[in-house]
Image (cartoon, protein in one colour):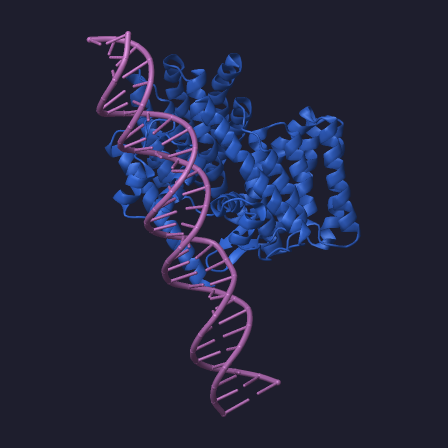
Length: 234
Length: 234
DNA sequence: AAAATAAATCTGGTTAACCAAATAAGAGTG
DNA sequence: CACTCTTATTTGGTTAACCAGATTTATTTT
């Protein structure tokens, strides 16, 4: 188990090294936005690593929107300029895994806005899906079972109803880590989940009534319980 | 150029198909959190696709925290439960590329919070880096050159100073797309950038003075100009 | 000399064979 | 039966050869 972690971080070190070498290459060759990177083959040779390692590094940078691979053609520098490229690669290299506090802080921030937007933009189909998720949650709670997943799925349904694809994506990204941490810290126990039903219902009603301020307020109430619970544990 | 797009979306279709098949498999086999997925080889055989395609799909789900590959051991289902797994995979499959409006909306939301946090938590080193970024930005603007990148780098410096790794990551994720869209819509022209110097300076000063409310207010002012500009174009 | 065509090369993507570590099965020992 | 050690197998990761399409170069034609 320990070895696994070491090997993992080792891989990461290798990948980061490749990424920073790609950055240096872009600087050295003065590659402008839209310019083509050397081929994966020559990069792997130049960096003395396997081609798949280079591919993995490129894929990561592609995910962050910094590079763009086109089949049978080449890998291109995104249209964001050398300076931004440098800064962002440095940031990416220094990215640390988010701590629990950061996650909760971010989640609350996102959900407050999401609830307001959902109240303004929700369609009937959105309502139906939210209602379904709420039903599943309540059922689980009333049976006295753990309902962390159903809880989060209800919140994701709200995110979908916000009509903001960007916010929706960000919520999806932080949710798994939230769930993991919740279960690790034993947040959302059976007792507090029961009170959660009403809170969820309130949020749902506010969004149904298309009342953005009320929705935001109810989310705030909902997270107040959660917030304190989390900070007590930490 | 057109063929490229088709092939790209084709690849995505293939990957999405694999992802949904993995989801179905988890359901069918009733895999619980922590359980092991079948090996990449058997998956590629079962799905009639190449092993690297399976690997790519797994990597994507790994990025979203749903799976976890451990070398020489196997790929494991994350500790988030079957129900959440199902819901999240469905969401991921339906994720659409964010539109400009969503991006701007999200960015403003994040930056308002980030500025407040930065005012509370910034270290002297954070200040130094922000100052440096601000300097580079001003210089570019005063020379009458385009300064979109330096602009964003200043904002990323604030994100770093917020002391919230989660928010920092999210900002990094949306920034490239923001830059691309800015340049596409010709936001941030030379004229308005000049007024941006003072706005940036105000934000910097508020954070330096550790005044969170002032910082938030100055960010709001800064984005008011930008906000209107964007919505006019759209 | 310019344009059109054909061949050669270069590209990212795919495939299949190989590697080392981790696990599981079996043999041996007390 | 319990425990240790060895061996065989399975695993994700790596490597190298191959593919089809795009690009460049060379050749031919006008």
